[in-house]
Image 1 (tube, one colour):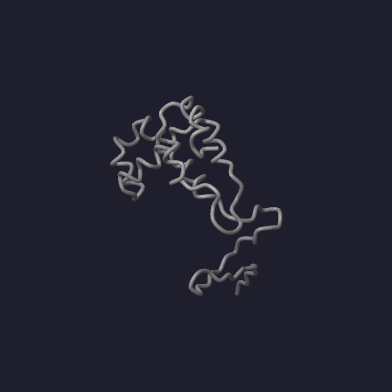
Image 2 (cartoon, rainbow, N blue to C red):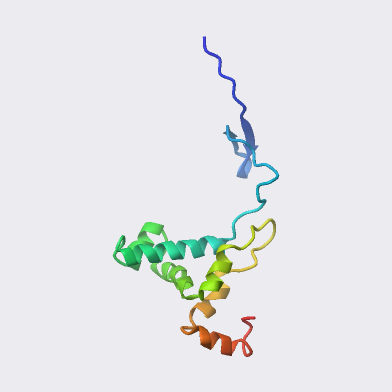
Length: 131
């Protein structure tokens, strides 16, 4: 007879579902919270743009099909690549969200993404609420 000793962790998920995990629980040094959705979307936008440029996918429609989103939604995600590089970097490195709503939402960035020239954005700052 073989005896195996192992530490397992039982955690309760949504709707009362219980899961058994043999992984160690996160330590206090691990960042608490979740990665902001806009950070994940920005990372996806960069990856999707690279896939289009490399020829991994033919067009946005095929990319949308692979990502299980609509073609207009894929266009919205890819438009994040129109942001200035320093804004993209800031979005990628936002702190984790620990509670409540996320500080930046993609819908709020759509108007900024539509401005084709970053210099125009700087001139508009006094007129609009981009600050």
